[in-house]
Length: 166
Image (cartoon, rainbow, N blue to C red; front, side, top):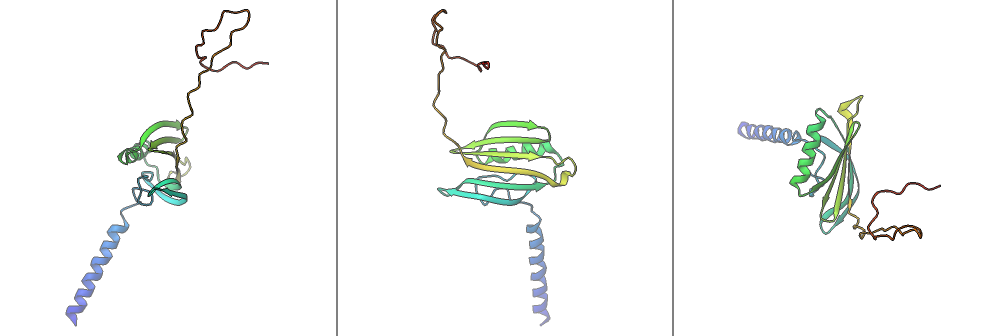
């Protein structure tokens, strides 16, 4: 009987320590076992508006909460996660205490906003949106008509914005 009790205790200890090890590994690297990375260093709180197409996520919105200890590192780590999954960085913008990353992959776009809560950095928010990339509109060429008393137009495209008229 003691031999069986010792085995049960040993198995219980191994199982418990295994649960502790797997329970401490942190948030998953990707959203719902897909090719969409989670924001580095953040815990996903809410996942909504999930859409799948051809076995992949074509749309999703994830809200995060996390501790920003090094904003530059966390932005760079998030960018690296997306690159490792085949996403291409389209733009990176810093706005006050937030950074916005825009990525593209196949027919999808992803927008990641990482913000720093100035009052409590341990509860800083992040937001991820994945959506179908809208098709590019056809190139449009504008040319200015020549006024009747001016030289004829060369048909060259007009660049910039026109001043407002009154």
